[in-house]
Length: 353
Length: 251
Ligand SMILES: Cc1ncc(C[n+]2csc(CCOP(=O)(O)OP(=O)(O)O)c2C)c(N)n1
Ligand code: SF4
Image (cartoon, rainbow over all chains, first blue to last red; front, side, top):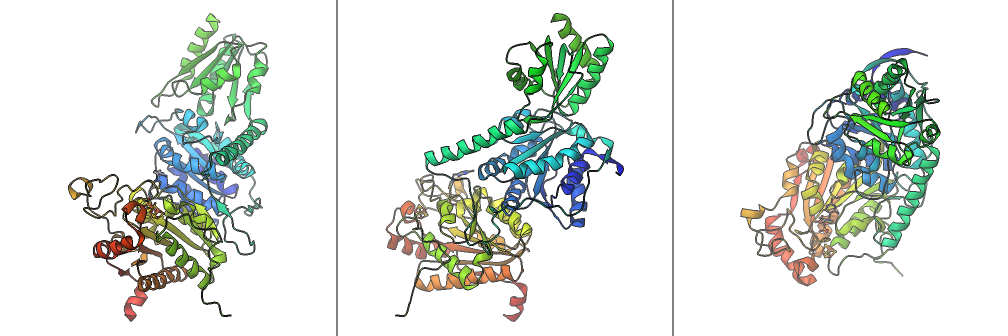
C-alpha cells in the first residue's frame, strides 16, 4: 500500500473522497482551510462539486439540499463557523439527512483565536442546535486515523440517516504524518436511498423531506423514534482505545490531540513506577463507558486531561458512576498542556489518592 | 361532456389551509399548471419556505423539501448541484426571502444558480401575526408598526425584483400580480417563462408575485385586491426587469 506524507486537513479531504463523497460546501476559516483548498483541487478530478458558499449558514443548507437529493456530502469549518451551522445541523437531524461535518476546533468563546483547542466538546456532543437530537461524534488522534474514520463517518451517516461530526483540532489539522491510504477503487457501491427527493419519475409516489410536525403528539412520536435510533447508536457504535489499561491504578482519559500528550505522560509515569494507563474515547457520542467499568477493580483515581476547562470530564464522571475519584487538568485559550505539566499534575493526584 | 376546467394534477387533492381570499392559493395553482404544461412535474424538486406556505409540500404534487426560514435558495443549490437535470424551484414569502434569507437569495442569483424562485410579496409577515416585513409600505400599519411604517425608524420598502435584476447571474427577473383575471393570466405566462429559462440552462430566474393578506391587512378579500392595485403596484411596478441576453437582442 502506498505510504505518503499528508497534512491532517488534507487527510479529512482524501478520506472523504475515498468514502465516495463528491460534494463539498463550505466557507473559509482557520485552522481548517487546507481542507477546502485540497477538495477544491481534488473534487473536480473525480467528477465532484466543490462550492464556496457565502456563509456557513448557506453552506450547511446546501449540504441539507445535497443530502436530500441522495448524495454523499460534507462540509468543514472551525468553531465560530460551526456555531453558525447549528441551525442547519438541527434541521438535518430533524429531517434525518446523512452528512459529515468536520470541526477543526480553535480557541473560543467568540472570535477567540486560531490556536488549537477542544472547547467545543459540549457543543458537539450535547447538541448545539435546538431540539432533542444527537450527532454521532468521532474524534481521531492521528492523520492516519483521520483517513480511516472519514470512511466510517460516511457509513454511519447513511446507516443511521443522521449527521456525523468528526471533531479535530488545530494541531491535528496542521500536523503532517506518513500515512497509508485506504483502498480506493474509484467507484464505490453506495447504499440506495429510496427516500431521497430526486423527482417522482420512475417512483410514482412523492418523497417529502421535512422536520415540521405541528401536532405535539405527532412530534413526540417522531422524537421517540429518533430516541430509539440514538439508543441503537449507543448499543452498537461505542468505540475507544486503551493503552496499558490492564493493571492501571491511575487512569488518564483524553481524546484527539490531547490523547497523544496523555499517552506520553503515561509512559513517563510508568518509568517513575506509577501504574498509569489511558482510555481514549474515539466516539464522543455515544460515549464509551465499557472501558471505565473494566478499570474499576484496580483504579484508584481517574485523571481527565483536555484542551479546555473541563467538558468531557462530565461524561467521564457519569461513566465512573461515583465509584472512584475523577480529577481534571486542562489548559484553555489555545494553550496545549505539555507532557511535563500533565505528569506533574498526575503525580500530585497519585500521591493524594 | 367537455371538461372546461379541472384541478391540475400538479396539485395534490389536499385542500389549502390559506385564509379566505388569500392569493397564495392562486399562485400555487399557476406554478403547478406550468409544471404540468412543461411536462416536468416528475422531474421537479420544490423547496418550501417558512411562512404561510410552510405546508406547500402537502399541495405540490412533486418531490418537496422543507427548508429553514430563508434558506431555501441554499437548499435548492445543494439539490441542483447534485441533480443538474432536474427542475428545482423555491417558493418563498417576503419575510423569508427579503429579511432572514437576503444573503441566500442574493448569492444564489450571483452564482447564476439554475433554479427558479417564486417570491410572494404580501407586504407583511402573515404566519406570525402580521408584523412588518422589509416590503411593508411606508405608512402601512402592522402589529410592529402600529402607527404606520415610518422610514425614520423602520427604513424603506425593499424592491427585490429591481435589486436582483442588477445581478449578473440573474437571467430572468419579473414582477407580476394576481389581483385581477388579466393579471393572473399574465402571471402564469411569466412564471412559465421563468421555468423555461431554467430548462434552457440560462441561469437564475425569479418571479415576484404581489399577493394579498386580507387577514393581517384587516380587510375583506375584495378590499385587499383593491388595496394591492391602488397601493402596492405604484410602489412595486409590474414588468420584466431582466430577460436573457439573447432575447434582448430580438426585442
Ligand atoms: C429562524 C426563524 N425565525 C423566525 C421564525 C418565525 N417565523 C415563521 S414565519 C415568519 C414570517 C414569514 O413571513 P413571510 O415570509 O412574509 O410569509 P407569509 O407568512 O407572509 O406568507 C417568521 C418570522 C422561524 N420559523 N424561524
Ligand atoms: S395570514 Fe395572510 S398570507 Fe397567511 S394565509 Fe392568511 S391571508 Fe394568506
